[in-house]
Image 1: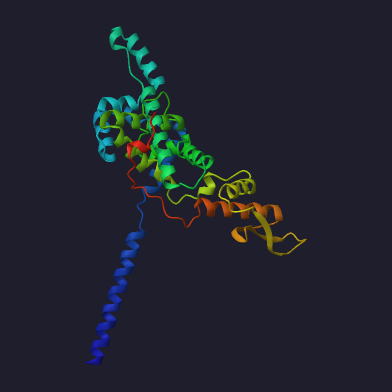
Image 2: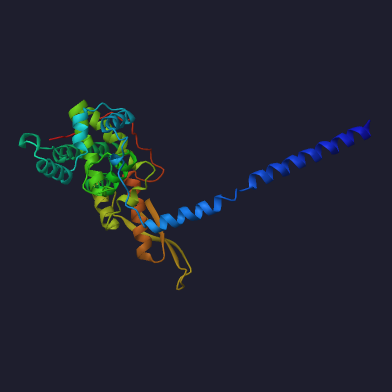
Length: 322
């Protein structure tokens, strides 16, 4: 019986190996026509040269109303389609379209095509008001200078263009250029905020700004956004205002002195209390690093701080629109 079992095992293993070899050969096999076809396709592409990207709105199956409707549903918002269409219409495109209609002999009353300038201004006003209120609520210890720097980062063209791109506005924008520039993407996002305020109210626009713009601070090192120009001077000013005593830098330790690998550790003290410490290749750098560390502790902006509360509900009285 043991002999039969061993023989049966050998047969089974040989069949498995044969099947695996056959399957491997099948997977590795490439038809002879594949290589010539790929070479021909590459040759034709090279002969055509670089192709200019084409907007999806130029495709035959493009349905603008359906795309605008789907855009609002993806975001979970209710837009008036006319407002949303206007939000994606650049002024340059509107002028070009009016000129085309004039050449076709269309009546003057039907030539006017609204653009997104007014909506963009309204959206920028709403976004700035909410961002400033959100930062004051979440970073109450940061001075006005720091809040303005962080708000400028959130409302910068690069940040707004990044958000606009990932919301899928690139193919919806009517512009004289394609793909649209960062300025066009940022302006369209502001216009979308204005269109949402006109369609569903200012509170929905506030929540839109919170969910898509303020969240860009998630897992962001605030030192990359705002670093004080003269940290030791600012620290002295803060210590005087809070009556903590005069900030005094002290050398805690050093190593590798008079070498290219020199390292110094400096601590900032006020009234015998350690406020912060830092390292550097020289005393000046170490002192500035220690002062920045002390400011982070006083402003509560360290990496281990309490995370931003992106579910906060700010009352309208806390958001200054006027």
